[in-house]
Amino acid sequence: MTLSHPQPFALAIHGGAGTIKRSALTPLLTEGYHAGLRRALAAGHEVLADGGSALDAVTAAVMALEDEPLFNAGRGAVFTAEGTQEMDAAIMDGRDRSAGAVAGLFGPRNPILAARAVMEHSEHVLLIGEGALDLCRRQGLPMEDAPYFFTQPRWDALQAELERRRSGAPEDNSDGGADQRRHGTVGAVARDRDGNLAAATSTGGMTAKAKGRVGDSPVIGAGTFADNITCAVSATGHGEHFIRRCAAHEIDARMRWAGQTLDRAAGDVVAELGVIGGSGGLIAIDRDGRVALPFNCSGMYRGAIGADGLPMTAIHREEYRMALGSEDQSFQTPS
Ligand code: ASP
Image 1 (tube, rainbow, N blue to C red):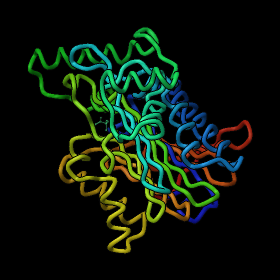
Image 2 (cartoon, helix red, strand yellow):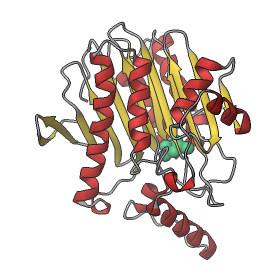
Image 3 (cartoon, rainbow, N blue to C red):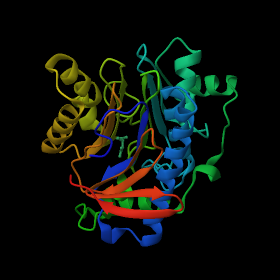
């Protein structure tokens, strides 16, 4: 894996995992994903290179991903079975385990800022409904209406899923399309120059989810976790399984109590999730800036950047792209 050696500062991001068949991705779409990931890496790296905090870096990276309609968070969030959009987000500071999260939210342009407002401007960890919206308004967070968040592909995906349910047809994921329609989430983890870790995750959840369903992303210890002693983690995948396994905290526990490396703990947890049907992956960073990005399906939109400032992005298992100057080069890495 890239960035598997210590770094003075580093950032990793994801834009969701699933069965991402190459045939389901046009070259234009593929380039759009890589470009979106690179923008998020650049936003976070700028913060870290300027001596900023891991917390600010993951906030900046996730905001960039929320603003990009290709990813299922903020603008471009998926729809519930009732045609609404309900967004979940969480952020955690590895210095003192302070954390903030929101669930089922519609309105704030950047749900990650809502989560951060809960952490910094309330005495709570998780807020929902009108109370969460009130806090966002009081903090002056930018709000948007339905047309801002709407994207035609997400709407079409909802109609396709509702039609499949009506017809009673089994789920056909042979081209990877079903997972791509259903899944998605964005996230970032970082280590700053002071050795502080942070994690942030934001999602629209799963297409055609029940109204009121909350996934793993805003559940601290499931989809999001950070502690300077061990690691910072942001997950993506079938949220119910990640919640049951306390996935993100499980990695912390194995490092803390069993002395495992980040690579081993993260890889094993993701593999075990795969065995019980929890398809997905996660990004994680340890106290020395080593990065792990395991997943148990055919792809995960992901990227990483270290102190050298060279962004690496990938979608499928073995391919990494590294932007060198204005030129993009694709290369293979051993898995
Ligand atoms: N984990 C998210 C959820 O269950 C979805 C995803 O990451 O694909 O809400």
